[in-house]
Image 1 (cartoon, rainbow, N blue to C red):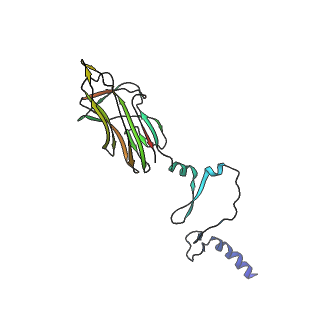
Image 2: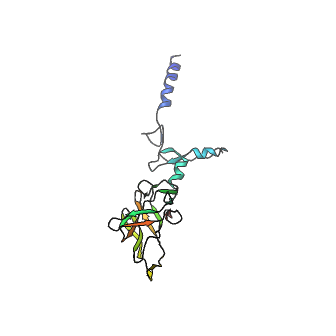
Image 3: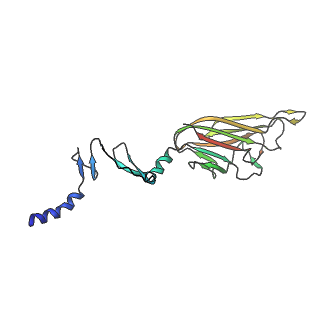
Length: 220
């Protein structure tokens, strides 16, 4: 009877020990130093199970469970479109001939990368981004007035469209729209902002979303 008692007493301790296959120094409950082959797997007809979590392996070989939504979201490309929150005209004061465009409305932002508080886009992943912006001045802008818009990466100008209005017999004949588009390579944490440029002390622009807006699309 005594040996039986000792075996029953020690079994729970054995079950709690770490087990190594191909290694004498296991670092997990089951540590396999080698390849893994599963000859058969059961078919789970419950499609929602794949939405819950997925088993993943890191570079160290550790197996863990990760939310399926987290995996999908990490590979979703950036798609953002912003504009002004109200359609009323905006009068923007320009310091040293420039001023940040205060876009404060998101029509959509799939990865939540644009801040309406700081009017700044911050990239969450490395990639190539197609960026454009359009600004339309109101009817107060006159002849020979320089007016333009630019794209800034990390506060450095990377693209700009700026030129003076033309007039005939004192009448402005230049369309009041300025737009620019370019491709920019961004790494995680890089920022994008938009600036106005003009010779005026202040510039009036339309607040309507169909006239003043910007899209940012990650293309790769």
